[in-house]
Amino acid sequence: MRHNLTQTKNGRPPALAAAAVLMAVLTLALHGCSGCKKIDERDLEYASISDVQRLVARAADEKKLLILFDARPEGEYRAAHLPGARNFRPQQVDCELGTDPAISRHDHIIVYGQHSNSATAKALAKRLMAARYKNVRLFDGGVNAWKQAGLSLYASD
Image (cartoon, rainbow, N blue to C red; front, side, top):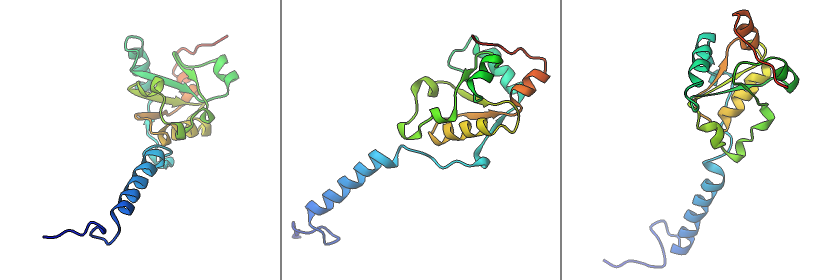
């Protein structure tokens, strides 16, 4: 059997076929595997107050278990927030940069706002999911539910 070294099976010269494959690989490496994942309201998962309470209690002993994000403005966060929470706003998540190992190393990412229907908390949860963080859930009830349950809130300087 004789091979034609000037054309591949699809009729293209080998150098052109190799260049096409290289371009496809580069495109995937630069754009296709990272970047923003499309997320909408139906993709959100929720954590109950008992889920959050249990995780907060366990997180004292298991450092990589939970990261708790308060999506409210900094002044509201400083006045009263859940134990161990960090103030983190939606605009701080850039899904084009990929995930931050300091966040992604946690088994659970819980986001909350002032109340159940907090637009800012939903936006933060969706941005984290779009950036491909795993196990992101929205605390259904937020600060209001925590306070109504008689649980401790903390203030920051």
